[in-house]
Image (spheres, rainbow, N blue to C red):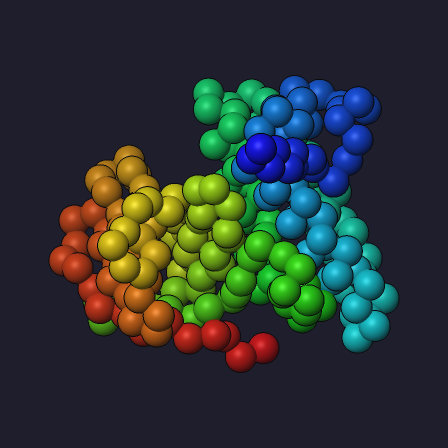
Length: 196
């Protein structure tokens, strides 16, 4: 007899889910996994001994603001996509801004931040990767950000997104990657763990 898939639940009790967004998170395995990872990273960041009191207060305020922003996704045309993007942005912010959130990676589903250097981009791209089904890449540079979903690939990890001005692609093959942005030629990139 095949094993039953294990149900993934969010970090909160679905019987007490408040509002449309929490109800959607309870019904969607990917959103539930993103919720659990965000909560895990937030807890690690908050519990870090090296985090000064002022930064803890900032982190608490950021989290309250983030929850409000996540809950505002109830008004979005595509609420599940809005919720996923909000979680991915928060995962990026926690991993990028708080050293404590980068500990115990063996217990989580996110990695990063990574520095991605591409010929043709006049800034270092910061990236975080989340292993859900499908997986995600969250890339940020200057005033731009893009969320890409993992798609099937013969080798490496391929992520794609349809943006308002065209298709974007990030194809990661170990330390080497290919980045395609709308209206620009393919760019060869180098991926390295960020030093924090």
